[in-house]
Length: 247
Image (cartoon, rainbow, N blue to C red; front, side, top):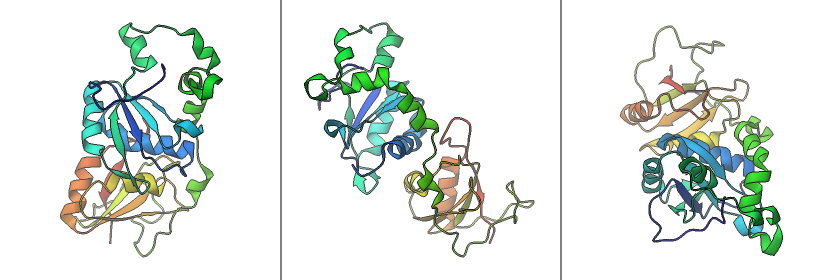
């Protein structure tokens, strides 16, 4: 990617630039959380975030369609992400992956010296030479995700079964989420379901990865969230299955 810059008067395009991100968040977790939050707006081609001091607290999300980027910018502006409001604008420079798709890509010899002059070309070099970092972040499992909060006092529907209960539970304020990727964290779910009014908390079961309970203030709020996120994919292979929890 060319040296990625941003500007307030930048015309709409496929890439959004996000800053004011929590710098204490681990890089792999940050990328997976951004994927979880922004994939609802459309297909994401890549997410760029780096460990260098110059780029801490920042990320770039490249969408396949500019309309997806527009929706994400509008709806997620100021969204509390790891306790800090996101600041989002369009990236000023076109990403390499988009430039290659539309035929405007021009290789730059200086990208080979991406560590020179104060990491000016870290975005370029890391993207081209360290692509495995991004891939690992997309599929890697953070050991910290195993430290999930306890189930508290909500009963697990269906005993040890992982499928749907035989008889669907009546509508209520607690949702039962199934088919979650094992790397899903409570923070990812909190950011997804917390967008809906009445959200109270996430409860995951440490001994049973792949499921979670989400509690709302009332039945109607839970129903709205269910319909909005039913089938949402944290990764391409795992559409969420959401039902009401049994009480």
